[in-house]
Image (cartoon, rainbow, N blue to C red; front, side, top):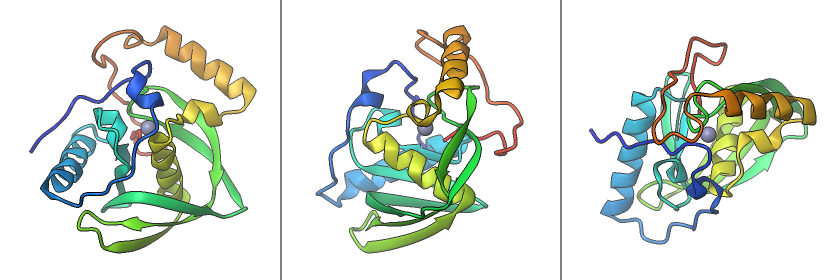
Length: 181
Ligand code: ZN
């Protein structure tokens, strides 16, 4: 069990695009395990490698009781969208209405380099889009409309963790099961 520190908004690693995984080695499997342990400990619905300071295109999820991971994801999004609250483990306690595609088909590889295809809708689709954004240095606040973004930025400025090295706010009960991503 290896729980890593989760990087918070303001850390430059969250704005740095991650690089594709080439070596499907023991190190990669350790990274998937670290992401899984850290996500489950938070607890979170998803976690991307940059959130623990690793610039590789890998993320994990835990949605509807199902645990998964994906390496080097490519997404195909439905035109139909969903609206709903979204949070992020790198923004403790901050939630905002975020529009996402309703369904996603994700292709990529597993930790052994085998090709995988994941189909998701609703929360899993939201999570996969959120985590893939992390790999491109994109954060959920970038996806908000102007008013939601203004509210979120104010909440971030007021948050106890803003500018602090470690989170001091724990996620509270919430419609997305109190879980950030
Ligand atoms: Zn996030």
